[in-house]
Length: 181
Image 1 (cartoon, helix red, strand yellow):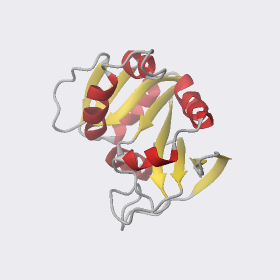
Image 2: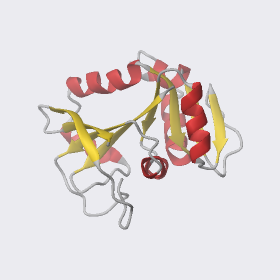
Image 3: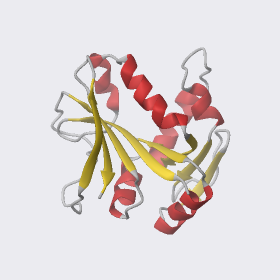
Image 4: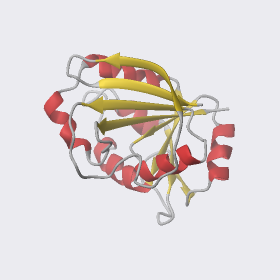
């Protein structure tokens, strides 16, 4: 059975929307190693519609010469949760339909290793509430934005997590890896 591992870039005040704000901090190579570790044992990618629509034009044209992550994103099977998309143009992509916890559980049962999730706030929130996330990897940036889409929205159900690992990078970012309890 596959395990769902979520990766998010997040501010101190919980914003994950449009992470262009990460650029001013640079990208520590050790962060790349941590993210590559998440991708390394993944043989599936799970995305919400909005993240798919952002990733497809950005990643589908990249090669390994452009970015070492390009083969992972382009060659790996991608599963898109969407109530509006009916087809997917990006290679190895399938539309799962609207969010349904049973469908995600069936995907986990079919995938032998890790299912990688990045961004996809609405999808991640739902999966956290339904107990479908096995690891939550937050790359916390030392900045607050005050506004923007947050991973944990106002009024959402509480969630208890256990810290599995942490790492601090030279650029001030902290990687916190959590497992649901």
